[in-house]
Image 1 (cartoon, rainbow, N blue to C red):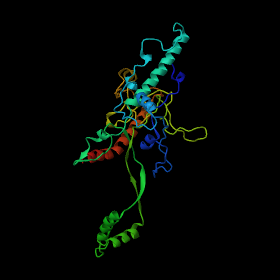
Image 2: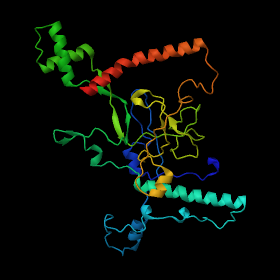
Image 3: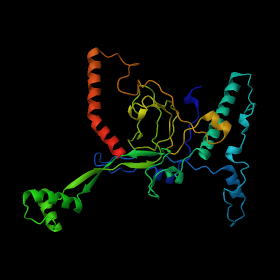
Image 4: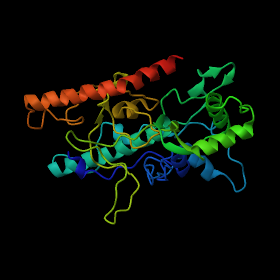
Amino acid sequence: ESPEDAEEPRNTPFSERQQRDCRMDGGEEDDVRDPGKRRPKLATEDLFVDHHIHRHLASLPAGEKAMSTYLLPQTGAQVCLLPHYRLLRATTQDDLSTEEGSKAEAIEYGRRYAEDYRLNISEGQMHAHKDTCFKYVVDKGVRFAKHCRFHFCHFVTPLFPGRQDDAWDASFGRIILAAWHPSVDGEDRSTVKLFVQMLIGDKRVEREVTFARTGKDLVLPRSPGDEEPSLFPTNSAGEIIPLTPTKKLGPKVVDDPDHGKDCLVVPIRWNPLEGSSNGPAQVAIRGNVDYQSMVRTLKDGFYQHDDLRSVPLTAEEQAALDEEADAEFEAALPSKVEAVMAAKR
């Protein structure tokens, strides 16, 4: 009955190559704003080779080429099985008339159900980028891929160092030269560049670059009132350890009013390439069962003051909090308007 009594959960397949593709390898981000900042490191999990493919490969004589997986009969494939635990009979030989026997049988049933569900997800719900991800993004007949239309991407915006290029030197130099000394030949590239270097030196420019990286953001379990879970857990020696699924329960509640997702319940996600599904439907239908959470709830405990669990605010404290929220909204409004106008352009 308690999650703590269950076995340690296993993640769905996540290979070293997928770890590199999703940039969840623990490497340095090279962000000027935060030197030494690292990317999350998600532990790898062995890929799943379907039963009928494994059986075919094991039966091949030495040196014989394997048949294409598209041509193999599906007999024995994971999604074509009817596991015995789903039949209306006990999964163990325990005496179900006793509490101990019933509990032991329930534990075994849960173990088989969890592994069956995990393998179904491994076979039918794992995302890999293909042409269909970008088929509606076409620029004059040439495919111009922005990012996956199924939203299997997450965005990061590091700040990178850079240097003003010659084009910038020329345009800036001509403007200053024209205003300062019209007799100087503003079209002379070497003259302009020398002038700029004398004026501002070898100036370096920091630029923000937004990347759409493969895979969705991880959603770690969180209880209301708890701090945001860390993507960088450490051991007793202070060393960062790879992320692995835990027994803790609790989905995330969105506290961002943008994009109409405020108060949306987001299920736990330990694998950035795993599509959300529904457990009972998945093991019953044994196919592509997509699930999108549309559940909304109160965001108390996930956003600033927790009205449900904290001491009520006084009128003065509430007024100060409202004033702070209004100021933040007004400060962010110009950039939001500019982003909307830029998207329309």
